[in-house]
Image (cartoon, rainbow, N blue to C red):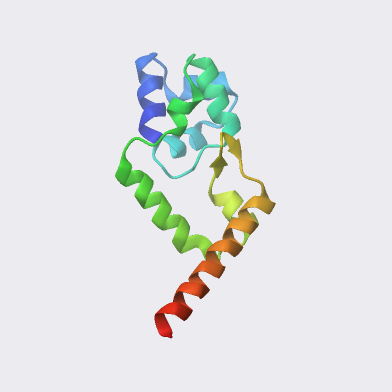
Length: 124
């Protein structure tokens, strides 16, 4: 995602400061999004897609399969975070909509139960 935002911005001849002005979003945070330090909110993705007249889905889809796998592994490692911490760290999108705290909590509970069941099968 980070490379796509930068690619589209440069293709349109904009600097980070130009995009910050157009989106009314902090320049340093945009820089962090482009470098993969921050995950952009759905709101900023909508603004960028509107400004550059592109489908938001293009921004949401990950550039490479390995990046997707890396994010999944990172998410699994972070599963011990509570739902509020997960919401702050990740923009979890399900069927094109941002996941709610309740949905995230349910998913975390399901994963924990699956782990428990698998451990029981493995050990006995």
